[in-house]
Image (cartoon, rainbow, N blue to C red; front, side, top):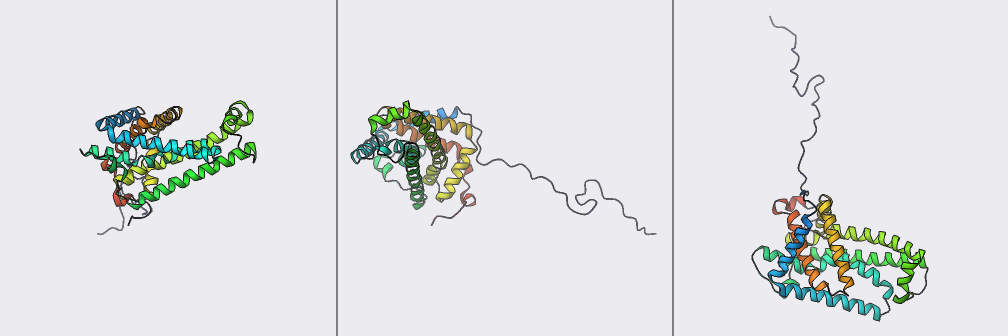
Length: 293
């Protein structure tokens, strides 16, 4: 005789009771941008940059000498045109566009990694795999640099009013020996640090990425920020090293750029390769915005 009784479902039935599937948490996935590198790894990048400089010093030192000559020429031109009021912001803004200027050094390190050599011409006239997207990244960084320059002028006007710039001989005592100058240094330094941190985050890996990979500038910008954020300890250490060496270059009237700039450029390539390894390059699936033509 058939029975109408229905046996209860087993305990592990996903549609028990009301027949609605149970909601289970997703399986954990590995962070594609985290490398779990100790902070001391940044000093290893610096040593690797020094090795790349020594491997073929001529082109790198010539590149650094060019950056030194350009820096001196810009400072001289600003003083000659009476733009001395913008000199300090321009020096700070160098941190914004520095990764863009170092593109040729990334190219030399990339070729050394492949067992190839390159001369100064190959470093200066190289063409990134992303093509015109690298130019778009340059426009973004230059726009950020101009925005910082305007912000610095406005901050100065807020504290000292719309008055003629007193000159380099008087501005230093005003900044260091007066309460208004201290307040200006505090506010201006804080705002400048935000600009520098943002520029560092979007460009430290974004510019090398456009050289190595075929992607768009906005995706490179976003991925660079993700790589910095997910490797914060080592990147804070690297940023501190870069800032300290830049201060050293300014203290030597930019002469230190002849050696320091190439070393930092080569080292930045090794930082990019350490965090953006071959198995982390997502290609089409990782592009966030557009595809380059």
